[in-house]
Image (cartoon, rainbow, N blue to C red; front, side):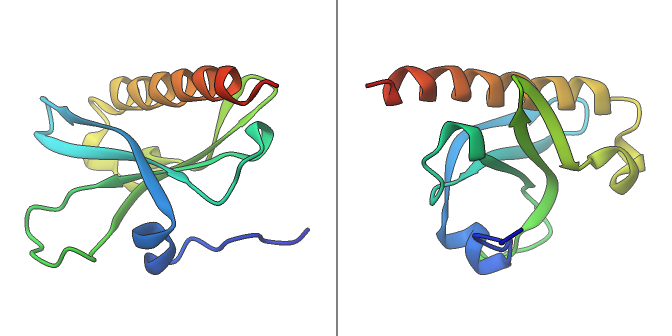
Length: 116
């Protein structure tokens, strides 16, 4: 299996586009849902969720939260936040459902715009 694009800081900073952002009121954190913009095939979309870290002033500092793909109409987490962020356990389900909703809406709209 060939890796098309790795998920380095540079890739996340320069080869993704923001498809949505939202603030979780319980954690008071800002989340960005990004899409790897190099991928044009609807079946090969990769989504990276980052977290804005208010403690960092550097614009190129990236805090990854989750990584997702869509397979057979279902959202799959490649990197799940449940184990990486136990401090959000009380609210992690709501955050993940919101992320999944954003990704599903994007895929539905992407299918509509790429149908020939």
